[in-house]
Image (tube, rainbow, N blue to C red; front, side, top):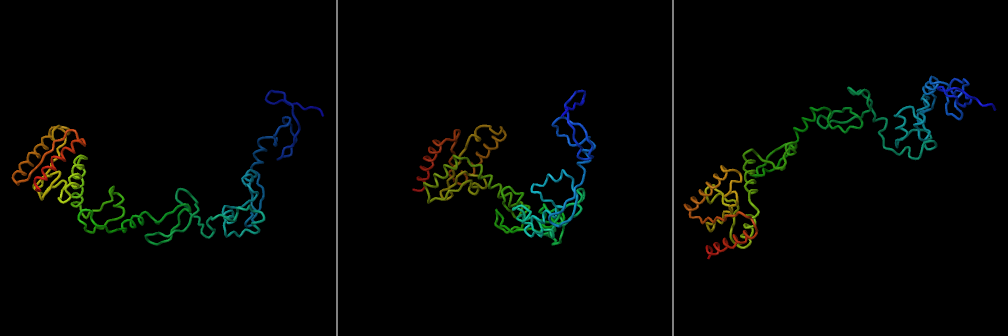
Amino acid sequence: MKDIYFIECGIRRKGEYHVCEYCGVKTIRRLNGKQKYCSVGCSSKAKQKQIQLTCSTCGKVFERTKSKLNNSKHGVYFCSKTCKISAQSLTSTCPDSKKFLPSHYGTSKHVTNEEIIFFNEPGHGRRKGKKFVCEQCNKDFITRIDFKQKYCSQQCKTDYDKTLHFKKPCKNCGKIATRRFKEIKKSKTKNIFCNSSCAASYNNTLKRKSRRSKVEIMLFEMLKKEFHNLDFVANDRKMLDGLEIDIAVPSLKLGVEWNGAVHFNPIYGQTKLDRIQELDAKKQIVAKQKGINLIVIPDLVSTKAKVIEAFASVSKIIRLLTN
């Protein structure tokens, strides 16, 4: 067979004859080339050509382009998404589905045709939806099938949140208070108070307790364990008419003040130091007037050895008072 040569882009190439698959015109292409059409126009028209197919579910004849046929993994075609879902559902009505559908067909749990509703969503066009019942007004409403919406409108959601109340005792006084669930979510501590006065009183007490140093707590626990028959009170405000005593023993008219570095150095400023020292002097005056033995333990190091030393000195005084 005589060789065929043709000019392509100014280059002499070896070619062969082939027939265009769309228009049937005989043309020349490269030797062993994969060109199917004689021109770009024929290639574009071939891609747009519709092929008639039969729906495997409803038997309806429909048309699709050849490129769409490659999307089918099992050689099964459907005229619509609804038919495909119906064939894959457990309640499939597809005739002889076991003969031509793969083994996994008919086992999915898609929504049945009766539950699917199409509606126009503003800004998005036609959407597939489902009926839901509003938890506030009990009205039926339609929303997207992939949404788990509980309320038909924002107003219903607001009204529903307002009606949700629960009762819980006040953390400070024990009085039953009624609150909404939304309020407890905003609270970091999850505590409930009947009014702002109870909240302030509880928070101030909590802050007073939280200001206790580790060494002060250690001394308190050691004294309580050693003299278990005595009543020790931390941060007492009754013995000195509202002034705080770190560790108080009301039955012995004894008080222990653990004065750390803030009582001697201007750690928080000179004004704060002056105020602290003024209160310390006032405590001494009130204690003397009331006949209370107020022991002051100066502490600048806050070590365990300091606690043991203070425990020994305070224990000695308590034994003298109890004997």
